[in-house]
Length: 124
Image 1 (spheres, rainbow, N blue to C red):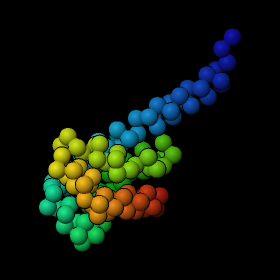
Image 2: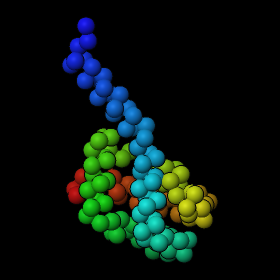
Image 3: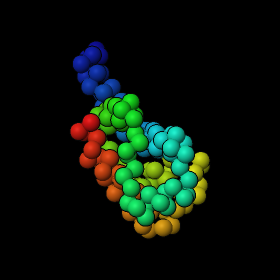
Image 4: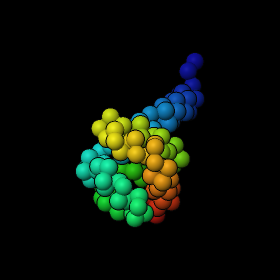
């Protein structure tokens, strides 16, 4: 006989595993959408890197809420790496993705931005 309690536990574990598996793709898509809304290009990113600009100042309250909800569901944003961002933007922003991969300062800047995002998100 099927124990409904055990089934729910297995379903929750499976659902969480599926969420964790999908999280990098969803996060990459979210960053891609942000880059579109911000009209990101190589010149803007170059300026941001050189001036060490804080990337997340343009995130709206609604977008912060979306990020917080997603983070809560998967247990944090530790999976959100430079590679995930590059994977999420490479089709629509190939030159920017290349910049992050081939200019060490840009990759380091993005990594710092992702660390800041992880630190700030719980306080939102």
